[in-house]
Image: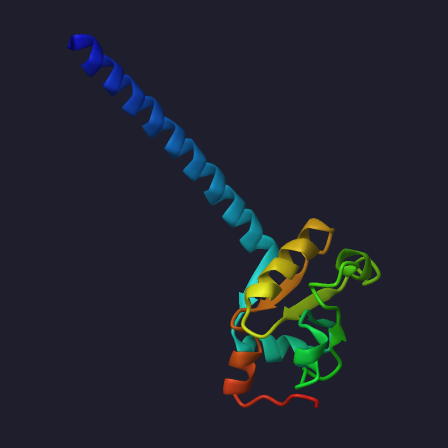
Length: 140
C-alpha cells in the first residue's frame, strides 16, 4: 500500500513539474510574438493605413474581396497554394498592415509574415467587421 501511495505521489509531482515547464515555454512564445506582431483595433489600424508608411495586405478570398476592400490593399489569398511565395515578393523592411474578414486568418498570416522575416506586422484584430462597424470606407 505504501508503494502505491509513493508511486502516486511521484507521478503527480513529475506531472506537475512538466506542466509548469510547458506553461513557461508558451508564455515566452506569446511575449515574443507580441513584440513582433501588434493587434490593433479599427481606429488604430486606420491611423497606420493612413500614414502611408506600409503595405496594406488583404488575405481574403477573391469572392470576399469582390464585396469590398481597403483602398490600396495588396491582395494575396491566404488559401492560395503560392501564398508564401507571393509574400516573399513584398519588401521586408516596410510595415505590413494585414487584415481579413474577422481577424482569424490575418493572425495566421501575421505569424507567417513574422516567420518569413517581416519585423513590423500589424493585424486588424477584428477584421473588416470592425472596420465597417467603425464606418470606415471600402473600395468596391
